[in-house]
Every structure is written in C-alpha cells, then in structure tokens.
Length: 84
Picture (cartoon, rainbow, N blue to C red):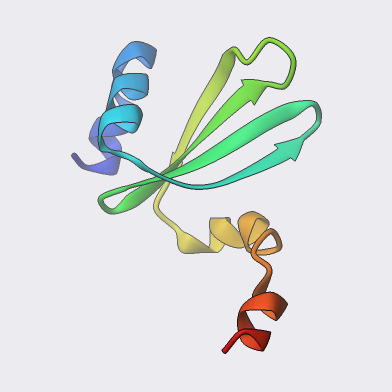
C-alpha cells in the first residue's frame, strides 16, 4: 500500500492496517500524549493517543526519514557503542 493510499483510508481502516501490517519502532511522550511509531513498507505512521484515556487522537503518516529525528534521541547509542 502506498502512502497516498494509506492517507485516504478511514480511521478504522488505518487502525487495522497499522496493527496488521505495521512494525512498532518506538514510543515517545509529548504534551500528555503517547505517540507510537510504526513502519509500514515504505513509510512511517505515528499514532497519537491520549495519555489518560488511551484514545487514538490522530494518525500521521510520512515518508521522509528526517521526521524520525524526534525518536533518535530515545535510542541509547552510547550503550550500543560500549557493548561492542
């Protein structure tokens, strides 16, 4: 499925697609929200959830890897380097 096709899906179809075909890569918190990052074939999807109710607030899909920078700080690279 192309990025443009994913964007055109309904909310229920997006949820089903991400949960069945996506791979969870990371999780972060921002402004009382929990944001999950999934990778689908050639693009990424962020799922924004309410931190208290766990309700899905938004799906945000993108293909530009520069937008992954927010998640790179969460990877403990120092630990990876010291373990090699």
